[in-house]
Image 1 (cartoon, rainbow, N blue to C red):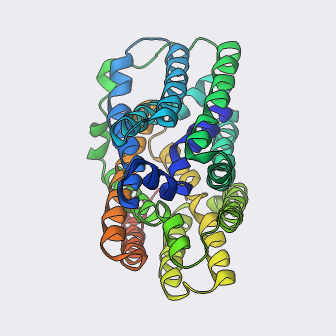
Image 2 (tube, one colour):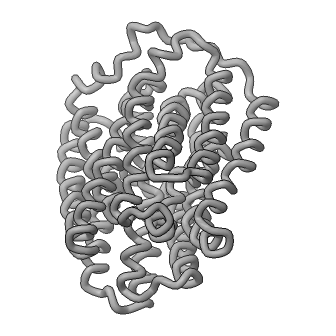
Length: 375
């Protein structure tokens, strides 16, 4: 499952480091190329909200295998796409896989290991996510320069094939255990703490991806756009993100909501600093490294919040979280693309900062609504 998370996240965010060559090859703008993130997010939303009900009582093992097969098909379609429409079809299919996989991740961990080991299992899942964050963008940039953006996408196919075989051999049967009456995710929003928390999650990921999706054009605009320089900057960002995922557990134990407030506040400051210090390579590397440190660790914090807020609704709550996150990614990438095409990186990064500050405010309201819960 951790390897599946690695392959999936690598495929999901591969366009971030390849926007410029994709746009040039398909004859579109960089903003349009960035919608490759948006379309995958949109289909992930639809899938995450419906997969539990559509899957019914079917074996979750079979469903996970089918989703992995769909990841292989998606990567092949994207790599071979003759035009923008087919390219977006391939990205839509990876969105279906994203929505299904992450919706079932927490529930799958709970079925694979004893209760006492569930947090560790979820940490291993997120380890695959963090590792993909480390290597996907810099490797995509490097491979794009070496074998072209199509070759970079096609490299996901053999990795996903290994995942499929490994799952086939290792995963046990996992029949559904929840009744259909408990599979409406919107019922959870009746609780104020859940509604506020989901709003904070949405604002956070919108702010993050309105900036993150357009890092390569930003770096090229500011004169840091050669392939080797891009790869090194993205690698530094990814490595710091992996470190952040390892360290965040300590901060979550000291204060869950404090951590969920400090992270977007720090990212908002970084977004504004990137606008001001656009000409300095050392400052840019430092700022992006700190961004990676906190941004990559943030999902671990929000999944911890889910486990404490709605532990009795693992699959449905997970689906709701995925839907909110992917919708936010879609909106963030769309907004960022429109702003980038209209005015470059300055309005894009400024909007990111505004959204992240809003996430801070709503996270504080969530903490207030959840005042009686241990943090």
